[in-house]
Image (tube, rainbow, N blue to C red; front, side, top):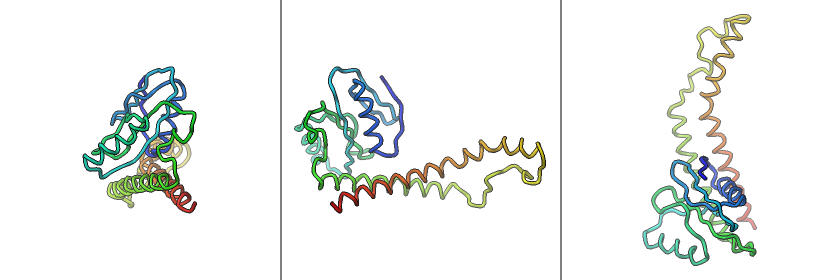
Length: 194
């Protein structure tokens, strides 16, 4: 089974993957286009997403071996692309064995890495938005729209409204990205205080 999905938040991506795995599937691959490839299985699997960057080749091989020694299989990710790695293994009855980061220090480090990952993506996207958006542009572009009266006004307004909404989508995405980054930061700070 192939499912296409796009995520900005790695934590939501992990929850979604696990919801599919709970339906009797195991993940075979994730492509850069957002295609998630699953196959049916009679075993229970669990997936975790880890974010790591700035590896040398030797360190990356060591990173993979550590998780393989604990029974995790790397489904997606490499040292060069974006640092997100999807790990999968058969579900264990011991909940600590189902976590990549089972102690507080590891969890703090994980959320810190995820926070900086989201912060960098949000910053780049915000720069992109500020470059392409001209603040002098009006939301409604129909000339004389506000001077029209009666049904002509309503027809023109309703005609242009979908285009206004489409022009606002990048800003809405930016707001969502900022929100996700703040939530991740709060999780990181909450764990740090414990």
